[in-house]
Image (tube, rainbow, N blue to C red; front, side, top):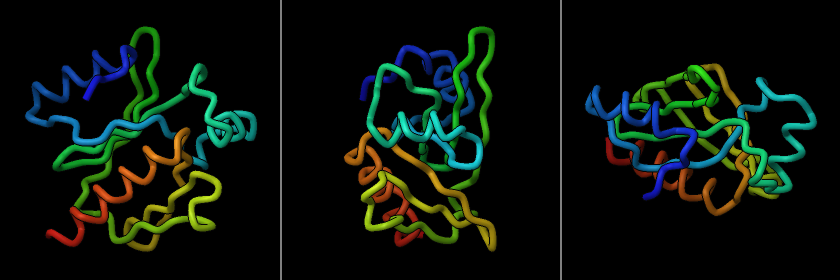
Length: 127
């Protein structure tokens, strides 16, 4: 899997800590995005990617690349209690559940979202 150039710095640090990416997809968290950003993601405009989701064997990382440093929000895969399509994936959106809390994740490409869904769902079933 070829990693986006923007993520090389963060992926290198993750590798130093023993995490290798299984799924990398351009995606945006609904609560952290403006309507303009969400519209660009839903339309699949790949020349303006604001953030990525990276799933490893241990964690799920939301990464916002920056010039000097990247912002990262991580969730252990074991803490994810559920995942489901929103509107049968018409809007490229999945809902992740961590306990009672939930968060919508909008993918730029529906195929990447489906790969991500299958990876997380398989990890839940496996453990």
